[in-house]
Length: 115
Length: 156
Image (cartoon, rainbow over all chains, first blue to last red; front, side, top):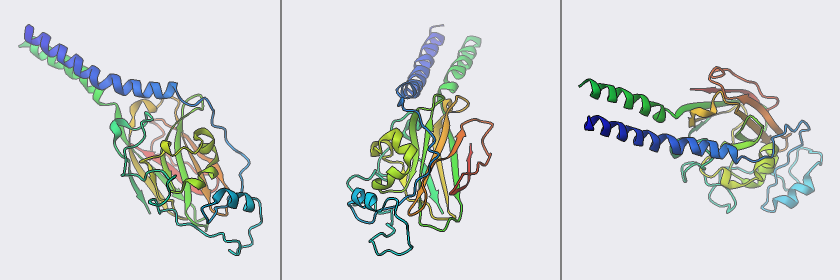
């Protein structure tokens, strides 16, 4: 009987240790979610990528301008895959664990494939 | 012996639900041949109130362009802390993005919605191009986007 009791106690402890943190991480995240509701922006805006590091100025200067198809204004396509340089860029996948936002279980990293 | 078996059955019944808190989910985004450079895509989740919960994936590595993913940007302020470790390359015209996650079971059939904002250089922004409720019955169903996304599907 003592043995049975021990097994029951152990299983309860195991279940609680697995389930409680996982459940609370989800519910806490949801409870603490930003109150700002996501609103669908029905008025799409024209997007202009800037080609230099002063992107804000470049963006404002070019925003709303007609695109005539040439790149005389210094606009060019940036290859976005140079993760290493920008201090303000996010850490690429695989270099750090995913954020603890309650969506990813156990910190398992997503597996991505892009064609 | 019987009591041992009973206790084993009970422990199994108690433990299994605790372990089955997550499931692998693969999300696939196919893009139209829109004839432009690589698209930035933000995949993120809102709850039943429409409040931002978290980001699943960011396709596109340069933070200065995130303002063009306008709904995502409004919800996050463009904070890279939201996307550290879940950021990859942008997706080319006609290309495909496929990401597999271990997602919490509780996200399904509980009012959560996955959204995708899209933006392409020199082309129009497309916030909330796709908004799909996360349900077990919705797995495998393809949803078309408004502008750049030919189809979005999740499977599990």
